[in-house]
Length: 479
Image 1 (cartoon, rainbow, N blue to C red):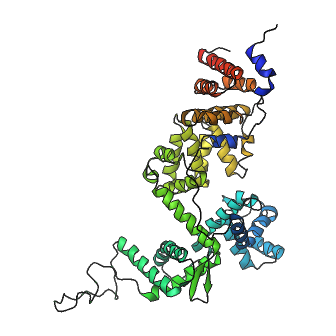
Image 2 (image 1 turned 180 degrees about the vertical axis):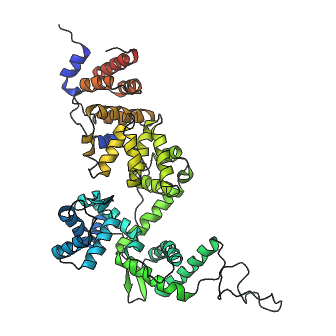
């Protein structure tokens, strides 16, 4: 009867091989793969995502053609879609120069192309356009959010008045969504005037100029409702708001959010109705946040988002970022990432993905710090255009192992034992002995705790024994 060392037995046992390696992008998500509340069901009659995506692709068809043409044909190093490039695109795609400019603007607003300084690159949504319906729908929603940029306001209107109408449009869309059918334009005009008046009252604006007449002295014989009450901001004149309502409805119709019936009524399209419902759901999720995430510092906000699914979490990140300056928010997130909580480190970089380009310089600087380097390199790779599933290729073996241990530490602190066992399959090493050797050599400060937790969670006695032995060696400084 022969005896073998535990590591030799481990290497010879085929059950203990890591036969299902998964990309590190999967490992990065392991800690947040938890039971969450069921996804809300859309209103009855909402089209399935595949049909909504088909309609969104139709709205953005010209933008996609131009973005794909630019990705292949545009001269490198030139200003994005300069005049000569517009002429070449118009000839190649059989579009007018005006259509090319409009399509290019839509491609930028929908994330089909990204500007890096003076260089335009294909966006990740363009690469996923034909295979990912949700990427298509998110791109269309981004265009809807920027409808006032895709359809510029008339030049003879004051910017302040335009801003008021843009701020009031969500209420118009909510009314259209609740009505579930055509709404007459006069009713929309009444709502718009009321909302603009409310916005001015909130800012405590007092009208000046010839239209501001002093209120007459109170008359005891006059009826109580004979005139406007003191302190009530009068509604803006219909003549000043009506043209802007027409502009807003035309702009929303141009991006496929609604249809107009000869200017008499407006009706949300299936895409528009779905988008308004999604935004209302996001508002409800943020309002129901138990810790008041939006008003909290970065670490508390990230803890509050830890159990949200990716979509609501990104919405929460956007709301939190909107309430702060970009520089301050990025600095606060990186400060959290430098802390001891590995879960918050990973979530901080997820929030930085929402920031995008403005965070690039700070993330590059963070790549020089060993604890943050794997996260920063993955962020930069994805920002540069790599798919999340392929971004792990930029990491060295040592960096990948460090990230594996750091993610395992997050699972150990905040997850369940089953998650830790699933995380074992995501290691880049092919066998458990190889993983243990490289983990021991990696020098991660949480190595002992991770190995002890893994040994306690694993049901195989031989593997658990080898992992406990490795933890003891790291703890005592042995080989």
